[in-house]
Image (cartoon, rainbow, N blue to C red; front, side, top):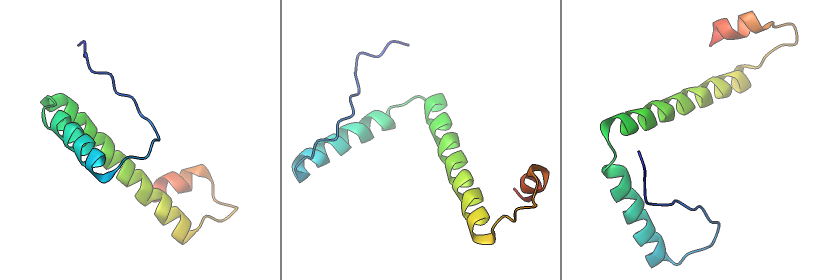
Length: 76
């Protein structure tokens, strides 16, 4: 699947009207994605949220020094 559009990521600061135009363009592109691409993006987003929840739970509850990897995986 060839795509003519090149996405470049820059760290330049933009004025609010420029940010609004860029957000609108990106939103329109995402809205026109095919089902499979949108589904994969949604699945990845859910996976990253779940991974963050696992790390949060690990930090809040703590891991003792005598915990092996099997116990950690069982807790997930």
